[in-house]
Length: 365
Image (cartoon, rainbow, N blue to C red; front, side, top):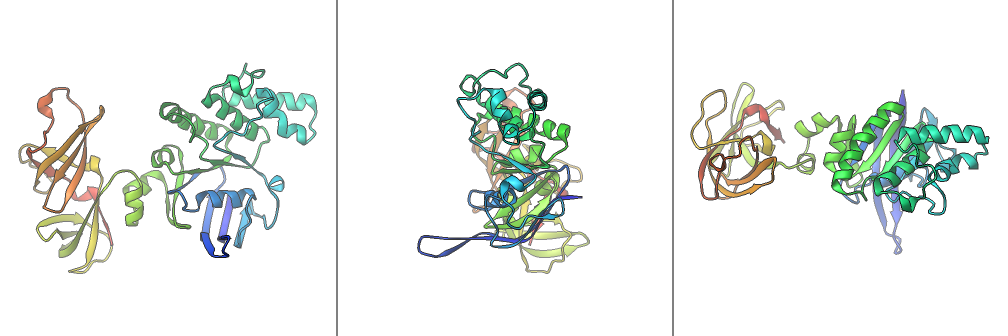
């Protein structure tokens, strides 16, 4: 069953001078029941506007929104089976943790014992049992975010909408909360729709991701598909670090093509899409897929490309190298630090060999 479906949804805003701005442009999207689905993209791409239309805070200019096969049309937020968690928590400072979580249930005029039981269950779910009598000012940022989650989950929505809820947390706590949030979603089985501009966050938590740019969805897929098989230059460049090498096809044989980069460097790459000689293409190579060595290597990899180390930055788990392949082309390489000894690292100015298998390169037309 589809939890949420958007059909041809657009949203246009007008400026003070009556100029129209298209925030969301004819969006078609299906989100399955029980899915952790992320809307990912840069600021201003339309992801938060999309979330707000699902919540009912904004109405689409055109198109239809269905939640569990029910047309939302002009239904106000409080009539929709959804709840929203915001980045700023929006907790009542004068209410205790338990009172904050119970607030929505009290507005529905549930019985005291029922409210008490549901609040207790919700706080246990987010690992805040025993903190019922504390006030928001007595909690850490991560604990306040858990209270906001409990307040949303206690009403048992069919869909939980999360608008960059971890944005205000420090990096270490943010990463801890990402894992906890994913485990919580699996535990409760509710459909989560998550908005973020953080690629690593989306890859860590999501069952599927929609990449958005300028109000449009460019690609939808699971994290591995999005990262390993980007369908456009924007997706390849936006998701993680990547090398984009422009060239033209000069030779084809079986499932391999030779692409000439900078008119000097022939690169053999596997391909699936139809190609033609002379066609301009972009080669996508992830930095961690590249091997570097001081001497030539043998095996099923293509013969190495000669390169010169321009920069070496040690970042603990790995070292980030920038190496020059041609006069106009450099490569970013990330090599895991398997050894401590300095002899295993490469220095600026050092001549090296770069190797990457055909299967680890992707062609974008």
